[in-house]
Amino acid sequence: MASKYLSSLNQSERQKLEKELFNIQKGKCFICEEPIDWELHGDALDVDHIEPLSQGGKDNVDNFALTHSHCNRSKQAADLRIARILARFEKIKNEVEMKEQKSPSLKHILKINNGSQHDFKISIEDDIVKYSFPNSGDNKIYQSNLLVDNLSYFKSFYAEIPLSYLFHDDKINPRGIAQESLRKLLEEFHRKRPQLHIALARLLTKKDSNNGSDSTELNKIFIFDGQHKAAAQIFLGVKKLPVRIFIDPDLDILLTTNTNAGDQLRQVAFDKSIKRQLGHSLFVDRISRYQQDHNLSEDDESFSERQLIDHFRGEAREIKRYILDFVRNSITQHRENMLREFIDFEGKGKKKPISYSTIDKTFYSLFLHQEPLTTPLNYKADIGENPRTLEIEQMVKLMNIIAEEIYHGKYNQDLGVNRIENKLREGEDIPEEHLTAVRMSKEEIMYN
Figure 1 (cartoon, one colour):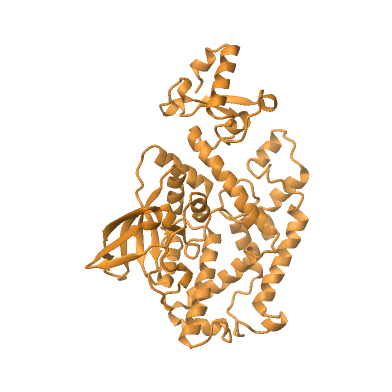
Figure 2 (tube, helix red, strand yellow):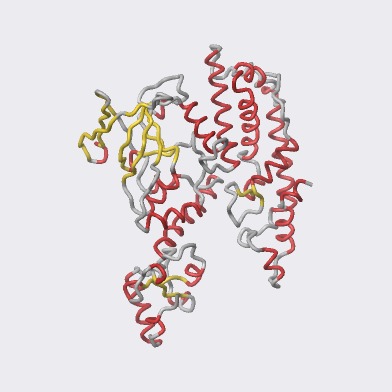
């Protein structure tokens, strides 16, 4: 919506306003928070409403901000305060993708905001959970009711926890944060609308070899559900989060429940790549449980995939899926896989050409051995001829051939895939190699 106030200013008054905003913002763009240089950026600066007029913002000096023109015109939210947060997230995303080749998760947001520092200890008396936060200077003893689920018998309690006592659960929820989901939640919470579903977490208070956790997780609160809501609130300045905390839960049951919520029950929107990672974790867990049930050491893999399925007879179909998920995820996350940088794991982006679904329905559906093996898990591993290891290495080689032939040095991430065909029809100059890469990435083409 056009500004009557700005339209009424002459050139001198406009320059005076820009200088005032420049000083208020300490010489930085309101959105990207990078420096503004009058000589370099003088002709490429915008003055815009911080809170849009369409959302009740005032058309006066107090509601204006100075931005780089590019930042303002490519902003992902109308409200400049939300646009600034998304720009911060974009910087985090780019840094994490460069260092770790994956999207940032709640772990990275917590780290930047002084989270994930302290252990959390509780005592339980007469169905009352008692706790405190001494490491953050709060020695008050808080109390919450202990709840016991009548069906699963899982114990839990509700509490408001400082960020320094919260960790992200990579085991149960390995997914990254999707920028579009984050934006919607930022806008929702910024408008003072309440959080309807609080985060879920687990707390291990005692080491138990049967619950699937390890000693490094002792006395730590791990959030495994609600990371997008948590991240949005943290970006908006919240220092404590309301959490439902499960006490000493069976990790296998919790992992299976969360997987089913995103797969069979459709309660959580898990992308295929995330389901593969969860299946990978469940397969590793079943190996560990098999070893325990047969009194085998942790490095004893003298049993086969078929024996694993026979042992967990009631889960035969699930175990078979976990085995294939393990192989798929091992290929996708392989450090030498050059194709992975061109795969959109979230399914909603506009920069990367290949959807994970396409990879799943082509490479993995056509070339992976779908049946469980009868040879031991460690068969010929000592001489580099283990069947699954060879399968993974050969698939990575195949993907690398595709990456070299079609994408490396040819696909332009800045151009992306959004509206490429429309841009071509409108006369925009699209490099032929980039256009070829986009078209070759379509599922039906790659399948052929």
